[in-house]
Image 1 (cartoon, rainbow, N blue to C red):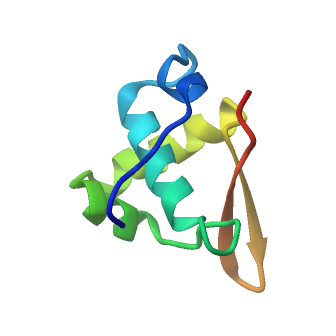
Image 2 (tube, one colour):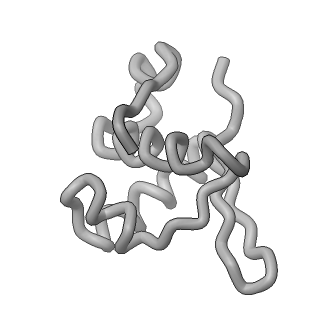
Image 3 (tube, one colour):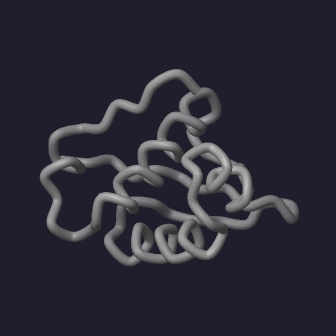
Length: 85
């Protein structure tokens, strides 16, 4: 992961805070190849120096705000970034 690029709609969003925007950016960059991210909360936290609890809370808020969709497929979590406007 070299850089994170966020759409203006994410950057300007009042629905999520800056930590959640950062977590969304990591998810988006990790989902680039397959269309979904399967990284653990620990892995995401290590990437951006945040605790597992912070990542868990951020993912919950991103789901609530409809920025991501989470599914379990064959015992693996898939996090799908949703299209932004």
